[in-house]
Image 1 (cartoon, one colour):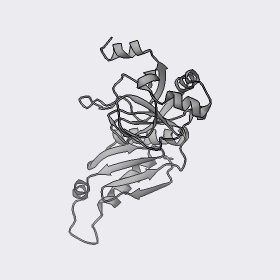
Image 2: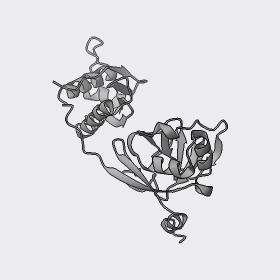
Image 3: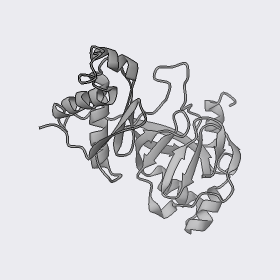
Length: 245
């Protein structure tokens, strides 16, 4: 018996979304990881990309190449549209995928210099949550986070598992520019800005580790399914990482 899914729907004329559940939780995401890895290892001609998300996997395909692989019949009765062909292939693959076929996860430790100019909102988060700045750091760095997906910006990790005690709302007015490596909190989420970009999250620290590596393969430090552990470093240690110490 293959993996069970909720539904399979088209996304435009060159992608299909396979939904594996309706909740954001680790059980559903385990299926997402298993399916993503399986499709990457069993790609078919015309398949372009596999994109894992919280509870779904999007499969991007080239409709012209898919059509050619069907034989390109001239008979209207025999024409099988690319979406139908891809849907059929995916259902066949799903029938052969077992839920216990889950790849091992990595644990990535990320140094963070909290507070001061690298985390200008740390004291604000402490004031809103009723904890001291030191307690916010202890709670934030004392949790193991699951990377559910990458998005928004290249290599930006959407992390699950943040302690609700330090949840803080987005800023009412986003900043126009946030430096790469900045660690933020928005609601019950935490994440890391991989590149300079506008953003409205509460900024509590910064890591010297680059998350977006355009000259590498893969070009991102993290991937869906990784687990992250933050650990505090001093400003001197941060500067040494950056080559200024």
